[in-house]
Image (cartoon, rainbow, N blue to C red; front, side, top):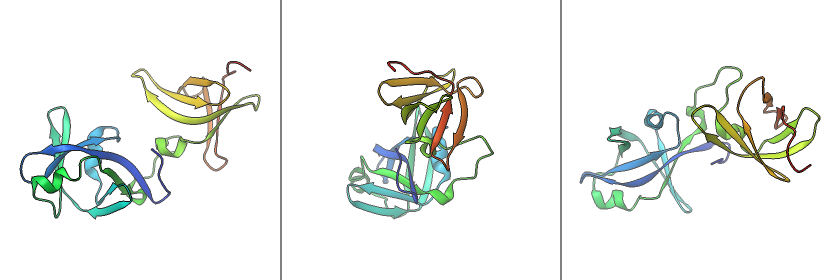
Length: 170
């Protein structure tokens, strides 16, 4: 889900809702309704991207629905199904030390305490108990996100995550 340094992919339009131009939203934010805190939205379909101010949004059943300025017709909203929702990265609040936005971590090199490269972080899974780093290298490694036990350091400047993990198939 990593985008250029100016914008961040936070969701997509997944369907239409009602007859007044509202649409269903699938959110990549946690919790999902946080996507409604950001405006404007950059809606991207292929090479075309348009900017819309978020007019309204809410939790509806088990999902989210939203409307944007300038779209008040069901058929216009239907044409946006599948569009990516991006926001300006500058809208994100700074996080306390030791906390990271997931997109900052994707693509970082993962090394163990011995300096062996295990691979690149390609995904982070939510499992309920704790998140799991998915590292792709010689083999695929699943490393629990547990500070001090498996996760020792994240250095965004160096582009490196240090873990207490031996790896498989070495």
